[in-house]
Amino acid sequence: MATSGARSSRLGGLGQWWGIIAAALLIAAWINKAAGPAIVATLSALVLIWSLFQAPVTCGAPVRGREDGCRNNATGLLMGCHIRQHRWQKLKMLILRRQVRTFCSGLFTDGKATLVTLAAIGSFLSGLVAFIPGAALS
Image (tube, rainbow, N blue to C red; front, side, top):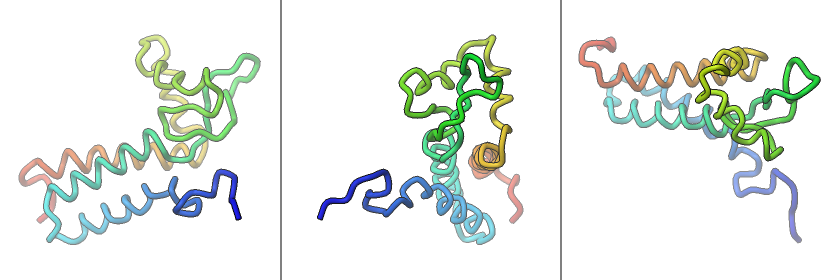
């Protein structure tokens, strides 16, 4: 019996949500003082990578005739949807100086994007604080 569709992966559709588990482990690592800075930094990097490249969000790439952009499902804050032109368009917006404001305004457009953006910012700051001596509460 062959299975098809997007949810036929080995993890049964949970493959795109592994970042939530990494974020929960990151929070537990900060609460449990026994976890060292290497563990916190590793978990922070995993959550940041998930947020930027695999978290399920709305595409938001600029579309002619639509003020709010593309409404297709996308993977990560930097990646677009299944449309080839949108796939790297958001990353290009971040690189081009004139379009950075447009990219940044799309980070807080809906609840999913806001949550993933805050997870990315928090994990980035967590990774930085993990290696600054005396910055974390001991």
